[in-house]
Image (tube, rainbow, N blue to C red; front, side):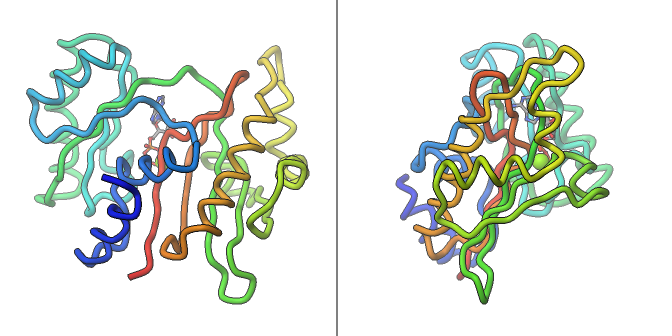
Length: 231
Ligand code: ADP
Ligand code: MG
């Protein structure tokens, strides 16, 4: 499915939020990196997906009723073998049932586990007054507690994105602390530019949220993508 079709199907179905794997297809179109990912609707297909991706993998629930997957026990990381994977699959469904109730589940995402890296957030929205705006900030609880974010109008160029990164406290961490290697700031700035391009090119995308982005020492990878569309 092309990305035009993804957006049009979603609008026709009255869906406001793109499922994670469809959001990745839009990323693909704009050259935004994400881990090798497979969508599966049965336990058998999921096992097969894990085998073909190669361990370690991460397993995630796909359900419109589960927005914050981790809160529902809907993300299991570090799965290292087929037997662990089968247990994780069953655990995932038990978790979701316990925490979210009997909600409809579309399937699961099996995703290649990415190496540990600094986690940051890249987001975007269409402001009524300013139009497309991109956001960059610290990942995890830092963004919620310290409001460590900076904004720019989109589209923007690499230099502007670099200045945006340097405005945040996250930058201090990305430079490399306590022996951790510095993050690849060029790749990160590039990702922000592409997020700005996506947002300013596609009128139907109202909001995007890449949370987190793994800002590694060689490349920047979106490991969770959420996009809200305008019907
Ligand atoms: P949520 O809906 O809870 O935000 P995420 O998809 O962001 O779910 O996953 C939760 C956390 O799991 C992420 O913040 C990240 O630390 C970790 N994670 C998710 N995907 C991967 C991956 N492919 N490789 C390594 N860690 C991951
Ligand atoms: Mg997330």
